[in-house]
Length: 139
Image (cartoon, rainbow, N blue to C red):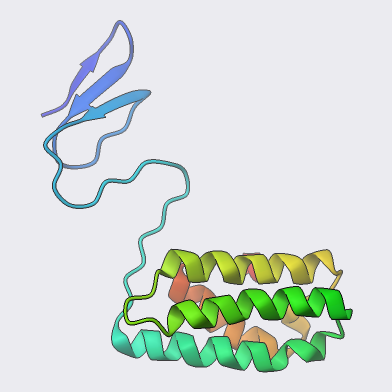
């Protein structure tokens, strides 16, 4: 049951979806999320294997970007960190996503684009889908 207090626009609630200015939630068991642009991604063993393969494929194609050695080192480092996380028994997808996004941001800062290189763009699309990133981010 949800109550809204008109005088302060506070919302108090139990289970279910609750939104408002100031939200109080009690008796929570399970997931609790707060923030903007939140995406839940669950990944099975088959998807995890595909994620690992595509991270490795992406890393193999990085040299095709023609980045300076400093930029290439940063991108390789971020992707290597994502691969290391993906190889764990219970990888943190949020960390893989963060490392992958950082790598793509570095490529963009270097003035390059992965969408012109199929060896990078194809695995990048699959990685993005698996970790919950929208394809426009890759462009």
